[in-house]
Amino acid sequence: MGYENVGRVWTLESFTQYLTTIEKPDWCEAITLHNTADPSLADFPNGLTLSYIENTRDYYINELGWSAGPHLFVDEDQIFGMCDLRKKGVHAKSFNRFAIGIEVLGSYDSEDPHSGRGLACWQNAAAVVRALLGWLGIEANEETILFHRQEPDAHKTCPGTKVEKGWVLGLIAAATVP
Ligand SMILES: [Zn+2]
Image 1 (cartoon, rainbow, N blue to C red):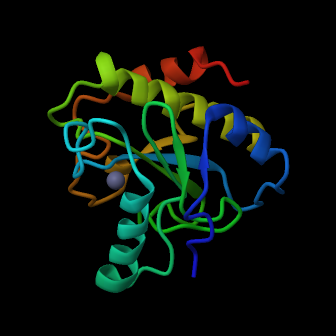
Image 2: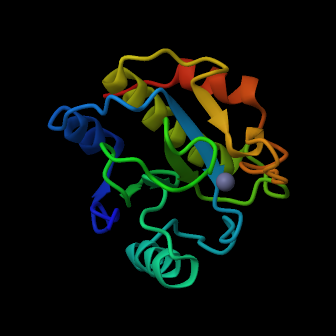
């Protein structure tokens, strides 16, 4: 099953170090960004927890029958692993075959990504994306940074109506990676 990294928790620094120890996949050309929506920031006032990751894995397996899930879950200062970055995940039907999937804590149809904890989560996510793009050897642009809602017939707002592509590309450009 594709849940090899459940139990791994990184900081930006240790995640960047981890990337130097694994081979980049030849199938990955893009990153797809999601928001967790439920849970929201308010649901996790101290950030994501390992038990949430474990429960989410169990839900994907037992309720949804997914063989894998997203690759990473990010909050304001932690990076939780779920699926092996070298293997295709399950997070956006049309993008799974060529994109790594990242879930950002928060519900950005209603919560604010531009200030406070929302901004901290998106800044951490942007730095993670920048580290991944460096590892993959690809540039950040409209084609390589995808939002879940861009999927044909997605009928979703993910990663939230308040999150705009140009703003996220700006955060990625401004991010510093250890
Ligand atoms: Zn999504």
